[in-house]
Every structure is written in C-alpha cells, then in structure tokens.
Image (cartoon, rainbow, N blue to C red):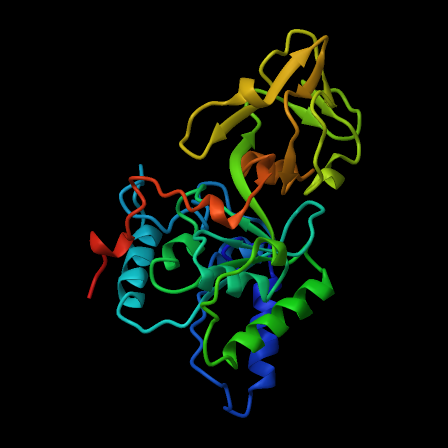
Length: 312
C-alpha cells in the first residue's frame, strides 16, 4: 500500500480487512508492505529526489543505490524463503480508466487471479522494477487499478477481492479461454520531454491537447486522428519507447501542419491530465488487444532479484 503516496486505496482496503477480522479470525497470514509514507503525508506520488517506489524492485539497474533499494533487496530475499499464496498490489489512476487488473505472466494462475477482480486485464513486461513483476517469480501476482482517488466503488471492489483471496484454498490452474477475458498487452510508453510544455485547456504551450483526451483510455483511436495542436517549430513533442527500450516515436505519431496525429490505430491507457504525474512517470501507455495463445515475451535481463543480493 502507498507505493505511490497519492494512491490511498490500498491503505483503505487494508483498514477494511483489519476491521472485519479484528477478532483475530483472519483466514490466513497477510503481510503488508507500507510504501512511501513521506510522500503520502504530502499527498504526492513521490517527493522530489526520491525514486519511484514502484520502480525499485529490481537489483542491478540502479544508478544511485540508496537505503530503500537495499531494503527492497533484503525484503525480496526474505520473501523468497516463504510459501507465498498471492501478491496483490493496489493502485489508483489519475486519469479516467475502468477498474482493471495487471499481470506480468500469462500463466493460468495469474490470469485466473486477475479475472477474479476484473474481466479487463493488462499484460505487461515494462516498466521494469514494479512490485508485481518481482513477486511474479515467487507466486501469482496481480496489480489492481481501482480508479481515481476517492472512488468508493473501487475501494469496495478491491476489499471484496482481497477478502475472497484470503478465504480461497487455491488459485485455479485451469487454462483461461480468450472469450472469457478482455486481455490487452502494453507495447510502449509515451513520455513528454522535459523541454516541452503542455496544456489540456487550450492555454499557451508547445503542445495543446484537446480537452477530454483522458476519456480516450481503453478506446481504439482510429489512425490519423488529430490529438493536439503544436506551436510553430515543434517537431518532436513526444517520446515513445517500446518494451525493449527502443525509440519508436515515428511509428506511432507524426506532426502534420502543426497537428499531432497517430499513424496507426491506438489504444491508450492511463492517459492523465496531471502534469506532475506526467513529468514523474509518463503521459500514457500504448496497448494492443492480445490473445493468450500469442504467448509470453521474456527479456534476457528478466531474472529474479533475490539471486544476486539481499541479506539473511
């Protein structure tokens, strides 16, 4: 919970569960990771100078190792010793998105776990360093995206999910049919360079997105749709990186007569109007509809973090 300090739904869910089982009748052990409390105290995703607490769960990819990186390595080393049942990471969105689940493996247990929360499921392998991906080496792991902060239905839905898992004897291992799930695959991340200013209300900026653009999350945007107007001389307003870290901006977007357009049909997720989040993370992700039979893609650096570090 509070891996991102401005996403309090996980805390609310933990409080609900503890209230329900205040008499000590908790069906199974529950370990709680309490994340960025300093950022939470200020209602921020992270404080300036802090790492993103949902990007620190991989060892050996850190430019400036800090105490929190060492603590995470030690935590994972300890978790690898335990017979874990499931890992649940609970988040909020800053943009308009449905409630959905995210997984990092396409194995039946992961798919069955995710669809118990939502029929809408996203499979991704990037960004690296997320909590769910680290725990996917230890047990079925899922991330729950529960709508905007204050979405009471999202809180209740996540609470019911956690309670259901606590009371489950097992997670189904049966294959999931494509028709029983709406599966998406995250293929790229869209960032705004620091040198580019932006607006969503028509105000002066290098890139002026049309109002209401966040309503396009999980919608298929037809090719050659105009998404924004650009100031004269702005030719590279966005940066798009694929799963392998390759720059594919030109494949996704083009600038024509002062307008930003998508070159192919596009399904975004997590589009947000929050500039602070955009600067700290991204504008959105790009997805494609996916079939389970397409298989899982692993990368060569996708090794468990606890094999190279951690403390006893």
